[in-house]
Image (cartoon, rainbow, N blue to C red; front, side, top):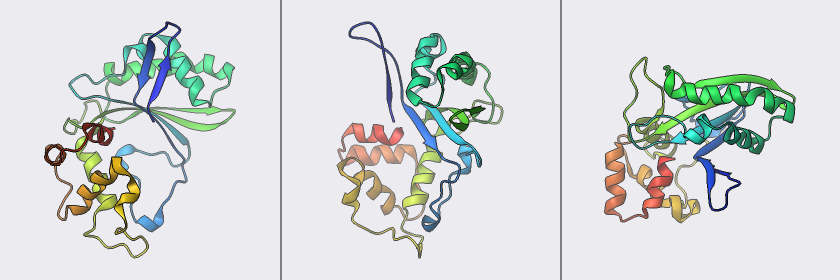
Length: 218
């Protein structure tokens, strides 16, 4: 979900974060016959809190309001709600340093921080998303790229593979107006997931609300 970090100054925001996601270690949907993408490096024994920012150009770093101002990080962690006040003071600057390191000290895996708190055992993961970029090369910053997003969506929705425990044909209107077109796009592709360009071209020709394509990017 998108998170707005409010400011004390009238008419302004401290910052915003595109995605805060939660994944539990025993998550399973065996009937769908689609596993969690290995690309995400999901933890098998910790609750994952994924802090992610969506980028569209060459800048691959978290917003400066998080990397330069500790108050933004503190508000974000308070909102997430897994830290006591004492734990927040202990970890706020450590987590900020990880946000900075994503771009300043790139590595070929997702940066994460394993921490044991009173509320549970967690892995805080820091992810940059850029669906317009190609997959990063070894040794470069690892980010979630368009090829991976399209591939996983198609793997979940495609009709050319029959799953005996999960029907993939149903009333696609159940997805709602915002996502029905996207679901139909992947259902209609028989051979592969296609490219980001093909995806955007399709919805441009269909005159789909650009906000829908934006939602897909996130």
